[in-house]
Length: 300
Image (cartoon, rainbow, N blue to C red; front, side, top):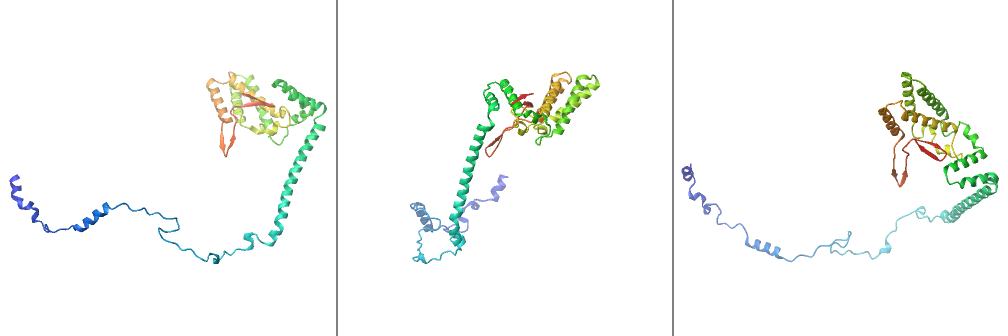
């Protein structure tokens, strides 16, 4: 193999002088010198525009007759120089300011009238005595007794005894309360399969009734008419629901696993804590079922 290669390529084949144009100079010496001068030249001044509207180092001649420039054509309405505007702008301004001042004065006199009427007519005699007694209490037990006395004096018991009210569904509350009571009594009294069926029915009623503001019984208007308590029907419904939950969770009607499942379902059904921030507003939601009596909230 080696002898064959040596015979095929002779030494003349590797002689560069035999290449075409070997003696020809392709690079111009003058061009190389100019390129070297450009590399060694000092740094030039950076080009900076005077502003976004003027080119670099170019003088812009300003017009000598600037006053001759035509003004944009505008109507009288755009610049508010009409005759009607000049005549009516001040009367309208005084009318608006006078109306605002009249509203402020009327509001102040209204508040003063209400304050004077309450001091001289409304809160007098025994009513004022009971109110001061209520405000002086330092414990809830004493406050509850004083609030009941004030409600009795004002006749709020009549309002509590009337079931109808626009801010809750009294018909549904009455029906569900009766169903809860009947199912609870059956679950307590019956034995065997009958007791199991009554317990399952009571459990279904509790799961369907225990919701946030169920049937409107948690509406704030329900607790703003009296000093303590609300409608007797709504209070009886809450207490009956509390008794049903107590029977299911604290007695042997259900297995331990079933009690845990029921409590978990009720917790999810009623709701969980939520902190919602939207535009700076904060909204809280209650987390536990409760029964209310006036201003007290008793966790179940």
